[in-house]
Length: 270
Image (cartoon, rainbow, N blue to C red; front, side):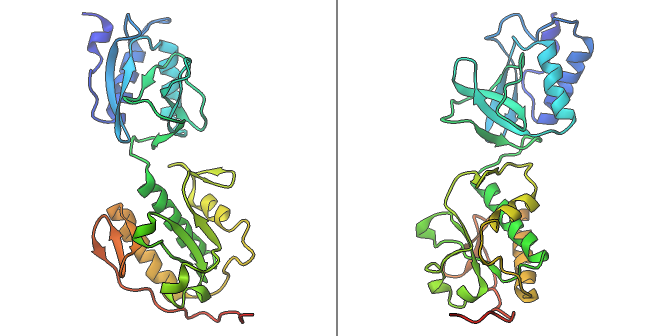
């Protein structure tokens, strides 16, 4: 039986996948590959919403380079361009660089390079991105920007994230018309900041208000307390706070109490 035949054909988690690679690396000789043919799939591993395939041409040096990043818990899982220009090769790290000699591929071809999972293999989609935004706003509240309030777009406008000043949220049915401090309309960037699973919430918070004329400094502990409880429930249930005839967590279907009215001393309106 060849060395590669002892490698698990199907791994249930990134942890199992990494452990199997470590075991193989410990007994592999310099110049060894996981299999005799590059086209042969020697293992699969779940990453995000996909089951990715590790090919037999992967070298000892490539496996070592991958494990160095995995064990240092450095970066996220990306799908990037292969040497043939096809966006289906998987890398781990902080950039779009391929790992030489490590041939892990997604099961589908993607339109562009992007993050597909956290370093533990957990998915990173629109819900996860919105949860990052919610956590960033709670971070701003803790930093004294408590005049900032979230106004999620109505259901017919899809997933949108809007940060407004408290004085523009007095009437929620008119809040959509207000000029936002920050508004997200899609994509994984805030200015030059790429939002990934490993991006610190504090960095996202700073990027949200980087260009704001009014950063919402003020005291409104009633709203900040309501909001931190909403965010905690949203993260636990992996659901997004939405305003659809009242506040709800979607898709969990949990009804939320309405936010308290502003209690901070608001600036005079011109």
